[in-house]
Amino acid sequence: MTRPIVVGVDESDTARRAAFRAAELAIALSAPLHLVMAATRHRADGLSTETGRHVDWLAGAEQFLDGLMGELPGSAITRAVVPEDPAAAICEEAERVEAQMIVVGNRRVQGISRVLGAIATDVARRASCDVLISDTTSDA
Image 1: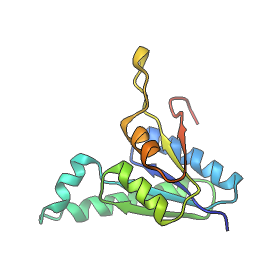
Image 2: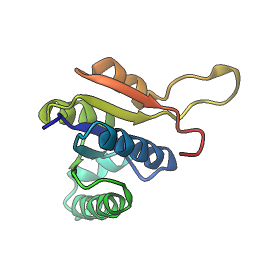
Image 3: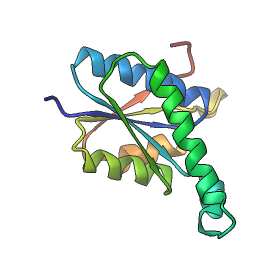
Image 4: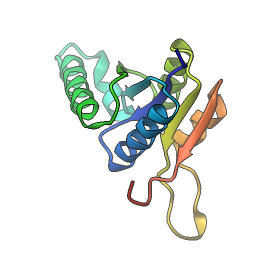
């Protein structure tokens, strides 16, 4: 079987469009798709509390991923929720599943100072496989 394609997602439109691009690639390459949702920095702060916020966030993340998996084309889709920095979580999960490629969305700054988003830049620097930074500023 072909090695998986990993895509980092959150609840943003940018990540959703990147997930659809990754799913299209996975279908074209006959590869499984692996969704990774990481704790954002503000959510990670609540993970160490004893108030149940950790469980609430994980349950919400799993519910979101289940819904997204139902919308994406293809059937060989797996997922992981990782309470960690997004770039590190995506790269570590890609290594764990021996991914052939990581797909991340690009939230560009508008105007003259267009640059890659922080997560896309961090993934590109850390990844041990190919990285596709999807231009998600246009409709998928």
